[in-house]
Length: 536
Image (cartoon, rainbow, N blue to C red; front, side, top):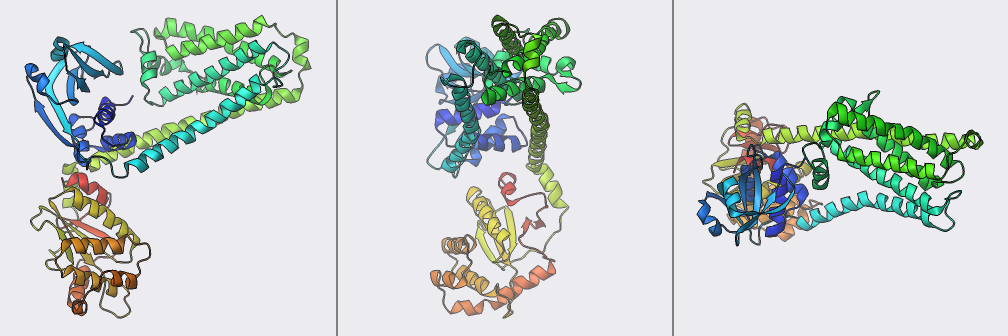
């Protein structure tokens, strides 16, 4: 189930028209060391330049709170608190998101104040608020959705052509029952996928509502019970293999193509035995009902009734079916089972890996852990008056980047440091180059030029020059020099280059980029992008 802080953040961005994609909201919140708290949401808004403040109000001041606002309320059972969003307080009703029912609700002011903590997180967005590259990320999300929907759409088209064309492969039976059988099979396939989706822990408000209609309904209890397997295989995989194999058979052969109809009939008879088992198990053993399982049983029963109504095949019919038809259809079912039984563990492993990755990110974003790991790293001599310095001279946080002008990872590090500098005021970046004054060192000329530009003490020009060099794909010194001309000061930079060279040797710099934070080397598990959350 999706934690409610993620859902509330999505709703806030939608109502307040803050341009942050759902995938970014989920990723950034799950990485926060205090996820899923109100603090994690506040820090998310800070990261994307959305002004926000949290305050406590008396119940009679609710009309003074700007809308929408985030708050904490008690659940309906009064045992658990939830983060929610309030979008309207006008009149006698308060409109808020009811997380327990996964829908908007209008409740009386009296009921709201009885649940309300009095805390309100208020937001104010501006032109700079939102995700950089929002349109690109949104387009990527849409393309990803299209990649998922396109195969389904193609299957639907083939399914329709197979079952509805006048000369389609359905034969040997009235067209309406054939279409009904095909539709039931497709519906069963969709419900089976929904069950697999729930078992993977995926969030769906609609499925959650269906599975928790009342106290006797609980899909998770049934799906996680001991009886949810047969010979170690999950019934959910068996169900998907049955309906998926049937749907593929219908698409390839037609629901009642001669021979196919007889084989499908016996498959339906065998599958109908599961209906009795499942009903008895849910009623007497688990004593809970799974809504989706009941839908599956209804579909199986309907298929059986539909086939019996059209007549039961006899033994001669069974023997008349070519052996190759048995092999072909069995192969289809086995193929679907084989794919699903391999895919489900892979999906579960991916989910577990994502959980561990998020756990690691939360640990990495803990300032206490960061400072503890940083304190164990090598301490460097304070490199005063060397390299290029950008940012606040009185900054509490000092970051040193040791780099090579022709190093691709250094170019990537430059982008991340530039973003860090623009995001946090209390940080200073010092760039030290590994160039020497040797005539054979190609690094010397661009470093000389950058150092000469730095002599201007014009931070804007220095930043533009560094961007022009590091963000260029070609690293062509002649073009760079023509774009940023300098005077005779170009020839007075060798002493500075020697100072940087000596400092690198004294501190055993063996690779670039090497980063130091407040005089100590950045631990290997951290990236520059992590510093944005750690140095705020």
